[in-house]
Length: 169
Image 1: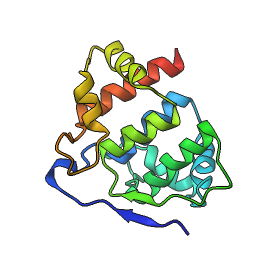
Image 2 (image 1 turned 90 degrees about the vertical axis):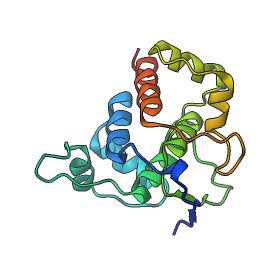
Image 3 (image 1 turned 45 degrees about the vertical axis):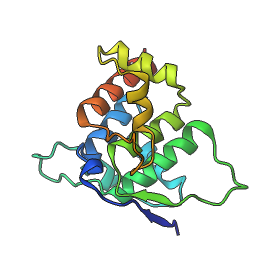
């Protein structure tokens, strides 16, 4: 069973972008099936059903829509890291970070796609959303650090859009 690590909740780090939106974006970006999402999530030892994944992909006004929980999103993002980079069996499983914030999503995507600072800047610039070096590094600081900055929905959406352009060509 995975260990859950609780992040201190402050007004600065409240998750705004819905997990379902992130899941849909990553699915489109990688052009993967619902079954593949189940497989990726299972890489962490966490099981999610294909019917749940189908419900996560529906628009929130559609019948059968289901909210993707922070726990499922955390396991999917960790599974994505394993899927893209490989899993080191010699290391114990990491604790999942809860609640999932936009900052955590950004960090996990950066790790999964092996992105450096210059890559991040190029991705954001490609969608006309340039961010300065100090602004970008502030997004990856620990909550409570003097220079910590919460990642807003607009930045995360633009990053996902730019990463999709980069991955899909």
